[in-house]
Length: 151
Image (cartoon, rainbow, N blue to C red; front, side, top):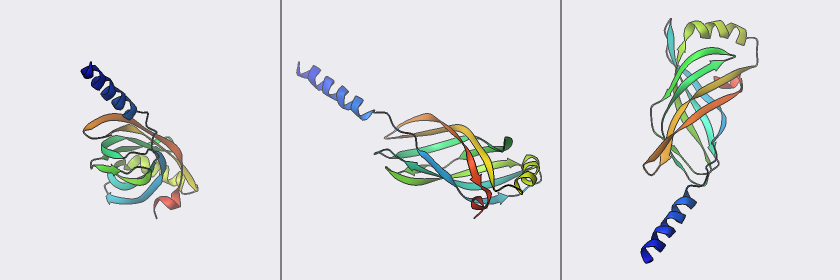
């Protein structure tokens, strides 16, 4: 009987710790810089700023996906370093974006006359804590001030 009680108590504690987590809140793009420049492809580095509304932190192991600016495909992004996600705090994710220069140049002329551009990101991230990691969808769409991107 005591064995069943211990097992039931362990199950209750486990289920209580598996409460649903809120998605991190996207707060913008910072520190965009050009790493490598090429005629066909270039490498941009940037930071994605997020806020974790959860009372527990974790780690982001990796992420990848694609990015668009005003419905024009820009390229593929990767996050290849582990990022510590603090509880109830902001954090930055360093991103490398391999940009198709032909498509970027096509869009940059139109963007010169705009204050904001529509940025869309779609991909997948692997995050978790305590050795338990799972894949999460990464999705964002919103307007970004061009001047703030390159500060």
